[in-house]
Every structure is written in C-alpha cells, then in structure tokens.
Length: 276
Ligand code: ATP
Ligand code: MG
Image 1 (cartoon, rainbow, N blue to C red):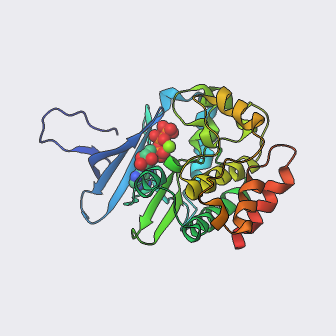
Image 2 (image 1 turned 90 degrees about the vertical axis):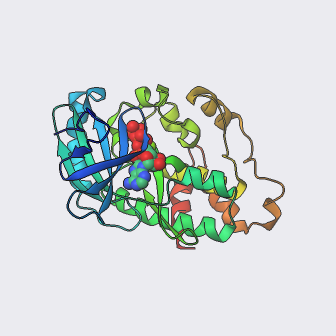
C-alpha cells in the first residue's frame, strides 16, 4: 500500500481507506497530508508518510515500539494516532486532524500573546508532556512547528505532535541536518551530551518566552551558534515593553525552565509551576 502515483489529474490518491486531499507539511523524514475517509467523508484525518529509507534498521525498531505505545494514548494535549500502516518503503501514520495549523503560524499571525493565554498554553503543553514523560518518552524536538492547534480560534486546544521520530534519530545527525530549527533545543541536545526528559522542559521555556515576547530567547543560524549564544548569555533578553507588566512568577518560570546545567532541579521545579 502506498500513495498511488498520479497517472491522470482526476485519479484520487489513496492510502488504504483514505483519499489524500492536500499537503499539510513535510520535513526531512516525512510528508503530511490532509485526507478523508473513502466511505465516511466527514472523517477528516492527517496522514503522515514517513520515508523509512531515511532511518536505519535499529531506529525503525525503536520507532515501532514507540508508535505502538502512542497508539494507546488518548489525551487532549497529544495528537491522537489512530492507525499505523506499513509498506516496504514507508510508514503511514493516520493522525487526528488539527484544523488550527501549527503554533509557529499562530505566533506569526498573532505576534506575542497576553500572559493569560501563554499560561493556558503552558498548562496544556505541561499536561501532555507529563503523560509522555511518565511513559519515558522524551520528545527532544518540541518547537512551535511541532505543536498543533485544534478547537476554536478564540480558545485553541494545543496538541503535542511529531514525537517519536526525533528521538529515533542520532542526536548528532539530527541537530546537524537542515530539517529542524535548533532555536528551542536544550543545550545538552545541541552539545550532543547525554540527556533526559528535562530537555523538553527547556524547550517549553523557550516556547513560553517566545509567546510572551514575540521572539525566541536565543538565536543562531545553526546548532553551534545557538549553543554559543546560550552559553555566553548573562540574562534572558525580555522585551523592555512587556517585562514591567509580567507577573514575577511568569518571569521566574522562564528563568527556571531555561536554566543551564547544573540547574536541573530548577527545570523540574519549573514544571510544577504548571499548576498556576
Ligand atoms: P519530520 O521532521 O519528522 O520529517 P515533520 O516536521 O515534517 O516531520 P510534523 O511536524 O509532524 O512533520 O508535521 C509538519 C507540519 O504538517 C506541521 O507543522 C503542521 O503544519 C502539519 N501537520 C502535521 N500533522 C498535522 C495534523 N495532525 N493536523 C494538521 N496539520 C498537521
Ligand atoms: Mg515537525
């Protein structure tokens, strides 16, 4: 089973019982399609086509285990994985369709958001992460492009997406590819050190910072530059316009989540602030 080749303009592309409608996104390892159930047209899903040739055999096995687990997760802040189809070249993940697009587009449309909205978003992401971490799943590449929006535009529900794959790839290879932005990656991932789930706490801190300020805390064209900027920074570059209006606990949360090694305890402590 595969995305059927386009022989005529009229012939629909089919993956099992889903008709492919349009492309939603794609990166180095995959292409994501919007699709509709052949019989029940109301059932709209996203089909993620993962190109296996880009993962080695060991990594495919890891991916299999993780996908098996993820198909059993049903949490409002984690994108649902309904089915997994395999063929010799690809894995197709049939996912819950999120009509609100990704958080990167949301931020570029809305700019920085009110503190109350940032808090609500953090609570949702924290709730999703807590589930992943309680099952020892580390995302490792949490960033606005990998967070999807569902629900209404006024009150969106955030969903963590694109997990599993990032961890299945050698950290060095991943950070050095042009696939992803390193702006939200923890210093220990950028520096190819061993890491644990606290790397996701760092990414949450970077996302919270960007939601509040409208720009990310550390910049750089590649992982080496971002890491250099993280290590040389003496304070977080909060916007002078918004800083006076922020609640101290919100600033504190950014500081804790974005704490460098040996600030491990701080990042975990930051996590507990999700009960704000
Ligand atoms: P990889 O880097 O592993 O190749 P990727 O980054 O291309 O993966 P995703 O992050 O899962 O793959 O998806 C890319 C984009 O496609 C998302 O940023 C989002 O815009 C869109 N997308 C993905 N999944 C969905 C979904 N379930 N509903 C709606 N849009 C989605
Ligand atoms: Mg992605």
